[in-house]
Amino acid sequence: MTDLTNQVAIVSGASRGIGRATALLLAMQGAKVVAVARSEAELDELTQKTQGLSIVADVADETDAQHVVAETLRRYGRLDIVVCNAGVGSFNELEHFSSAEWDRIFDTNVKGTFLLCKAAVPHLKAQRKGHIVGIASDVSKRTFANGTAYGASKYAQDAVLASLRKEVRPHGIKVSVIYPGFVDTYFNDTKPGSAETEKTHLRPSDIAQAVRYVLEAPPHVVVDELMLHPLTQEW
Image (cartoon, rainbow, N blue to C red; front, side):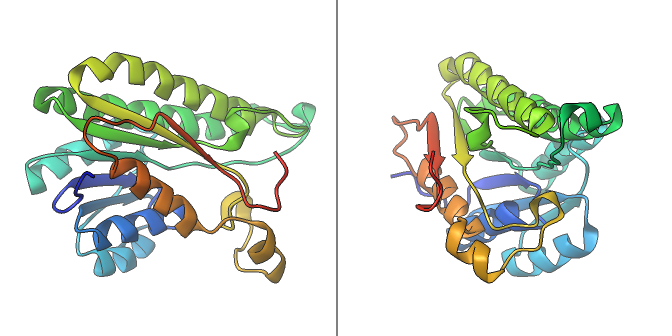
């Protein structure tokens, strides 16, 4: 089993939901967490608990993504784990999507993953080890009505990570992708914690535990893909 103690981990989209739960759990396992999000107030509250580093940044901006990695290396001198979790979504019939909304979804879900990995990979290659974990979605593997933009972005994000896996495996770098089903978060401007969603949805902590599981795999093992659903969700 891989020990996460003193591992340096960047977690994007860390201010809420899956990202926050992941940052907290990794800190509990002894990792040095670099929490990244656009909300300074929520990051400050999180960092008080993780005792790590917080960086206000938009990973869909290349300058910001490069800054996140540079600041991590400046603070800790190394980088071991990158969790690409930042994501947004909205749902509508194709004809009612604006091009601006399409761009917003693709910028965060696809470009954000691409840019954060682009900034991190040279350093992981230099040390010939590291682990990238992408938080995708079960809709990376299926389609549904009103999901053209979000679904397409998640298919694209999955393709980026799957291709990257083939590129970096010879350098000793692991790439894992987690595909959650319904999760009780603030996603799509919903408020978590209702009596109904508590019965029908996964918790952010469930996904955080999945991240921990793939990261703690023995050094010679890589979990390429891991899909999770609530028992009530038919696949």
